[in-house]
Image 1 (cartoon, rainbow, N blue to C red):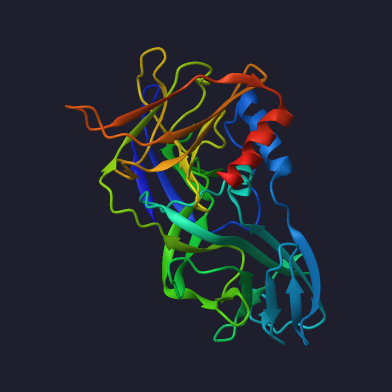
Image 2 (cartoon, rainbow, N blue to C red; image 1 turned 180 degrees about the vertical axis):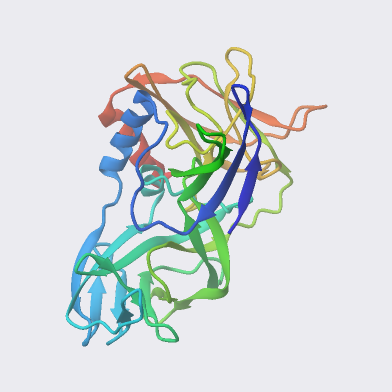
Amino acid sequence: MKTLFLRPVLGLLAATLVVSSCKRNNTELPDLQKGVDGKMLSDLLQSRAPQFETFSVDAAAGGVLTTAKGTKFTIPANIFTTAGGAPVTGAVSITIREIRDASSMILADKPTTTSDGRILISYGEFFVQAKQNNQNLVIQRGNNDGIRAQVPAKPANGQREVPMWTGDTTVTYSLNGYSYINQPITVTSQVSVNKGILWNQNASSYALFNSTNGTMDFRLDSLIRWINCDALYSNPNPKTTVMAYFTNHFNSETGSMYSGEQPSMLFFKPRNQNTLIKFYNVILTPPAGKEGFHSYQNSIPIGQEGTFLAISAVNGQFYAEQKDVTIAAPDSGNNYTTVSFNLQPVDANALLALINSMNTK
């Protein structure tokens, strides 16, 4: 568990904010502190994001499930127990959510960068849940078989294996203060992560390419969390920080704290790579025309070709610009390079068309 300590001042009260990532991703938590424009944009994206597919399997017999995208999940017999460890028999409901391309990463807000800004090439992001009588089930402790998955995939650059990653989608927000009778009190709530998801490598797990089946095979030994089969993107070029300026239509409600969906968003897809970078760090105290986002420090390769998609929702109207770029070296004396956007009004259908077109970039 990772913890970030922040110390804002709320009125006359000095408080401490503790933001800690927790692996509780089985449901989408209520949207908190979200403005009307942010909610409008979020609702549109979520309505077109990949949805859960639901299957039924006999716990005692097991079975093989195949998703709409052709991924196979092999469920061994007698693999499920209750949270308390009791064996499970009878019908079990399996729900699977699968993300395989850039447009789905945008719509579901699941970009492919690590928690420290490294770029990941994705072979698929998956969320698997098992329930019986509306109770979450777990994989039997000590069961080395796990749930076996086979994803249609072709290796790149002679790869034989790629690391597995686990992802958190929410953070716990704790405010320490005093009650109405001046007693210490802590109030906690949970909000979604602005960066979409926090990917961290599972150092002991890898997915292996199967040349016989044309698949990439991996094993699930736990449920109710996002997992990702990703290779680290290798580019030997020097890295720079990208400052991305929205010259117009940047929603001032967009914040850099963990406070739900942002009404302005920016994504970058490197050319011909199944990866998506979300710029979520908001530029602080900018002058007019320089509002926007910046990348992680020194994280974007100079000379990298790719496509940006800038999106805003302002006063009930969507705005967007899609822009092909080659990341330039910083000007002399600067430690950053810049990209500027001039967003234009779009309706929901036009915005969705731009998002879907990112798959071919």
